[in-house]
Amino acid sequence: MSPSSLSDVSHALQTTRNRTLDELAIGDTASLSRTLSYEDIQLFAIMSGDVNPQHLDREYGSSTRFQGVVAHGMWGGALISAVLGTRLPGPGTVYHSQTLRFVQPVRVGDTLTISVTVSAIDRGSGIVTFDCSGVNQHGAVVIEGEAQVHAPREPVELPNATLPEIRLHAAGEGLDGLREKVRGLPPVRTAVVHPCDALSLSSALEAGRAGLIVPVLVAPPAKLHAVASEAGLDLSGFEIEEVPHSHAAAARAVQMAARGDVEALMKGALHTDELMAEVVASAGGLRTKRRISHCFLMQTPAYPRPFIITDAAINIAPDLHTKADIVRNAIELAHVIGVNDPHVAILAAVETVNPGMPATLDAAALCKMADRGQIAGGRLDGPLAFDNAVSPAAARIKGIVSPVAGQADILVVPDLESGNMLAKQLEYMGDASSAGIVLGARVPIVLTSRADSRQARLASCAIAQMLAHHFRSSPP
Image 1: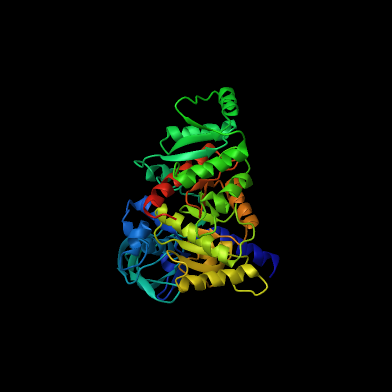
Image 2 (image 1 turned 120 degrees about the horizontal axis):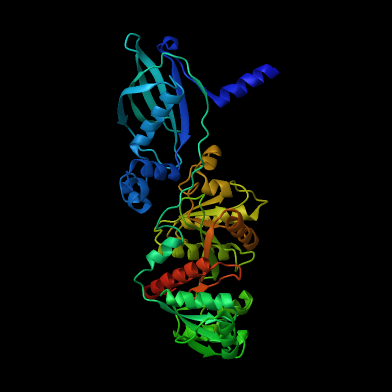
């Protein structure tokens, strides 16, 4: 292709040009394709005010005949308007009338191709009639109708508009929404293990004042009071369980949980291994039939709902048996926070089973275990690469047909290293907020990092509160 031809192509891509009334002929046609995302549905609801739960509430949608959320019918109508206004006839077009018939629902991940074809021209009035149709990726007609427009009489050529980037922050959802979910629940008595630095102590006291927990401070009293004095914190009214050092604090807290004196544990200023060694010890009394695992509950502006990453803190290189329990623990957490049918993506580097990549074999085995009822309560699919798990468009491009792909609620990572890096990348480069909890023991364990924010610690306590109340009726 010559340089002049390349320039012509570049110019065409950067501009919008119309077809005037005199240029139109019967049979002229134009089309565009769009893949529906959940964000599209949310944006259309915001714009139109149509908050019908059939479009927005996944739990409600799953109980209807459509078995899930579907697009607003007029989303397809808006795409017809887009073709008429930008492609054929293009700028200068004015709507006269439109009829529509909605044949099939459009679901998240569906690709809708809209076509308009000139069927009649009245050059006197300037009214042009178009047959309009929309088909999905399977070739099925989902919308059809007829449009009449006043076609432009003068040529128009304009630079393409640059639209702003929009990110949705759903009010009442995400980690901030956890506080709403626990509103009205009594606080749970929680052993705070060795909170002997300002951050862990202040977080425990604030969670207590917020009504999430009743903190029992398990620590050397002299050290605790010294930290409180230096940080300007008032310990009056808070119970202190006296121990000589951090290791004793971990052992005593586990004993208290095993006796039922507390319903949750919260890590303070001690190393994770020091606390978890006491939790997993056979003599500690907190072990259950499941392996213990960690879940990050995360929310990022780039994804339409909270999601769980697991396991990124406890099991370094889990085998298949351990991964099965990791999945079970995450599904239980999803249920407790209100996701009744969580979509579980088993992550790997690729979306195909490769004997040379053990993570893909584990993923396939976990899905078969779910098929056989060995893992219940959620929909599993894998192996899925990260992009296929969270992006409907990426899944569609790779030809993946799955109820999980593109809309995962739970991301099960191959090992701790990949999970930890994924969670921290999302937090530090993806503006994600997070909360952490350990499951698989008889009580929930708030396992925070020294780098965690105040909000992360409070959100983690809210999760522990919800789990503790859940365990009262459904012991782990």
